[in-house]
Image (tube, rainbow, N blue to C red; front, side, top):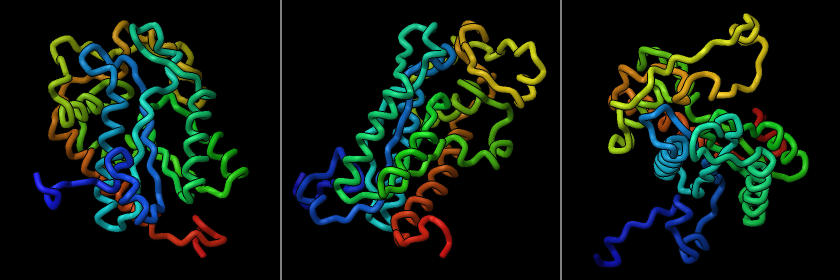
Length: 263
């Protein structure tokens, strides 16, 4: 391959180099954050890490076509999984430890004059709002949080036929679209989970942390049947279209005294 034919993605921090970075002014950094945990019996332990990495990379690739000032950082693979540790080889790090790593990364980015940071979260157990609130009172940066699976929820019922809380039809469809070779559908559990005994918890106006091992024996809340690669691809396309547009708009927005609000 000749030099002219080489493809270096300058939106990918792990692929670009000092020569190219020195000639760029990056406005937005995207930090994907996942988890390593059981997802029913049929989905890979790296489900959250894998799909969040893909979404981050694809969105930055699309945004680059519009603004060429977005950089995608390598994903943090681990998340808060203390309530899933009953399942073999679930890896847990505390929110405090995770916050520390994220804070250090943001501090490094600020040193390099990047003040707009998007945390692309792929795991429901990760909670970053308190950290963001604190950081933005201590540093002149703007941190945005996106739980990527929520981006297209207004179209969920147009694409999927069953609800999904964890490792059901939605997540199975995403896996089928992105890494079908890692799925073993024949061993999937039903996803039927033991309900709370209290109406307040069932209705959702009282909440608690869920011990997944008490719900069922296969770490799932949602029926995976009816999943399809086509449905997963449709949702991914919707998410990436919306999120890449946001990244481009964010990159092109002036950091004035009223940012991120209207003038």
